[in-house]
Length: 86
Image 1 (cartoon, rainbow, N blue to C red):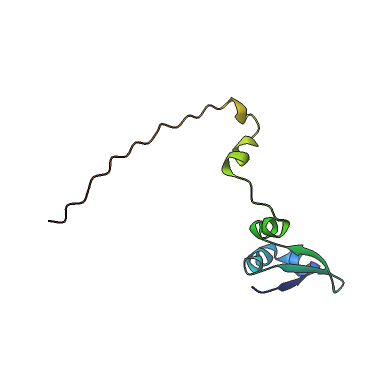
Image 2 (tube, rainbow, N blue to C red):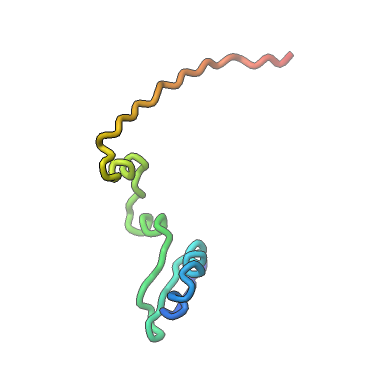
């Protein structure tokens, strides 16, 4: 895991580069040479905060107007047969 540093000016010019760098580890964004902000992947933040990320169900529950959507998936039935090794 690496730590990367971007000045505020460099961060503003190339946010995509900072996001790519954050895949490798935290990115510190400096203001007048001093660390002012940190950019992390959301999974890293949740791990540091001792939380798990939101589940798919929680995300779907957050969709405005989504409470009126009915979704009942069919049950999956599997029939497993022994393999023939002849």
